[in-house]
Length: 163
Ligand SMILES: CC(C)(COP(=O)(O)OP(=O)(O)OC[C@H]1O[C@@H](n2cnc3c(N)ncnc32)[C@H](O)[C@@H]1OP(=O)(O)O)[C@@H](O)C(=O)NCCC(=O)NCCS
Figure (cartoon, rainbow, N blue to C red):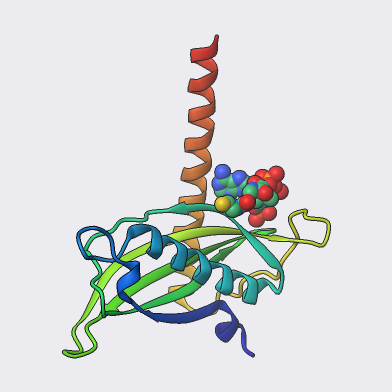
């Protein structure tokens, strides 16, 4: 399998009635669970390790998903550090009778590869062979920096309140 094949994955699921909320649309919790499984499959296949979810960013439910639609998640490893990976997921909902497709949301999962002792494991670097991969990598790096900066800021403020 080439590097391009192992860095991306596509998973689809038909939205059946038991996944609906009180309003009759698909429950946000169901979509989150699906996204987590997609991120797991994408990161585990790329790293060839068991992986855990460290964080989920930018989960924005821009449009409701309806019962009967086919939800397809296009996932891709955007960034690889030492043990962590950012997986970007684009969600498309398709009306199977009309063929209409809607981009309902995109989000970013940070996954960490674990070794047999349950410690973060070193994984293969990502080859950046085209401009799109380089752009995705740089954007993921920026998100990672901003997330760490926000964590530091929260920790500082918490400390100030406790003083
Ligand atoms: C994921 C986990 C093993 C990381 O532990 P840790 O002590 O922070 O380990 P490290 O410091 O080695 O960090 C591991 C990687 O995560 C990254 N990381 C840690 N905190 C981060 C943060 N706030 N933002 C972005 N990246 C972060 C580190 O930079 C490192 O990446 P790198 O190896 O690519 O440089 C630990 O946080 C954990 O077990 N979390 C629970 C996971 C879980 O149960 N998920 C399911 C939740 S329902």
